Length: 162
Image (tube, rainbow, N blue to C red):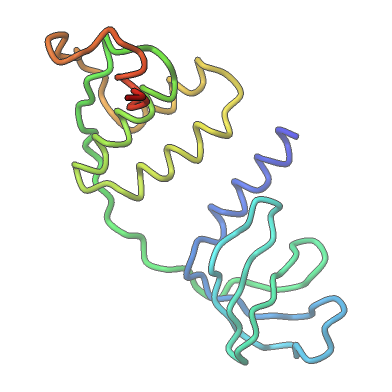
């Protein structure tokens, strides 16, 4: 399973959104001629390239079954490399709480895409330690302001029933 996840991650890196593809042959699709071009919309969780083709169709490519080549890739978007500070040290250590704090910190810093990416990676992680390491890739851990923290767990998670 880990091997499959690594394969899908490699495909996502190789064929990011906006990559232009030239089809050589598509299994079982006679109306998809060789030489047809299209654009990658995304790579799904099972490793298929979800495509929008120049003929208007939206068929997925299956690597290993369909034959194709990349024509060009999108220009890399200049991403912010500086990690914002997130008040995680001293916070409730529940991973969902920490993920929420880190996510809000990223969104406030204008890094919504990184927040979504972090969420996806954490929810696919296998352990608490791995999840903490992923959070650390996106934000700097700083001290939480204890005066603003409540000891009431229901209140911390916004679940107070009144």
